[in-house]
Length: 158
Image 1 (cartoon, rainbow, N blue to C red):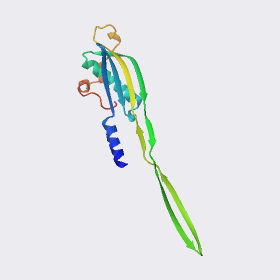
Image 2: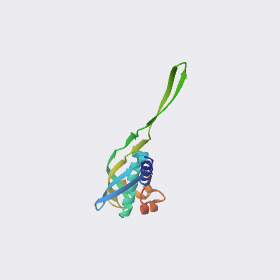
Image 3: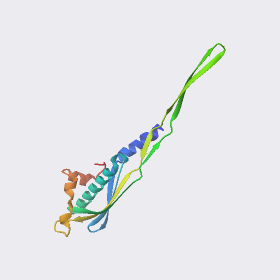
Image 4: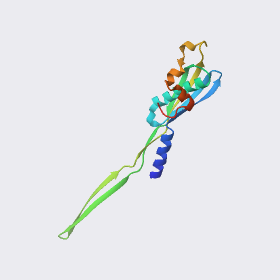
């Protein structure tokens, strides 16, 4: 049981969050992002927005508009079986015996599993494109270390 928990923890920590994009036309992409339960739905949304910004820059555009989005999760909390510990004492006196016992239930570990998911439809723009004046600047979304994020991608909820 202990080995299962260690392996599960390592897998969850190693894959906290991530996103990917599929190009659907010259200037549109579909972004899919997922985040660990601890990140919450907000973390998955931030990962999706950052993935949209990264993929916009990688595709040679400067800004984007999110035209549609969808969120879901399959988070589950499971209580593993526990154990009952019983202690007792027997006292003999005058031909009679008494027995006292105390049972204590110790619950098993709580296991949180599943992921928060976010999907976005994104339209990308360059300066001068129709609608570009309403678009969000991808570099501003990513912040001052935008080049590193474009190079390495997103692996944690932000």
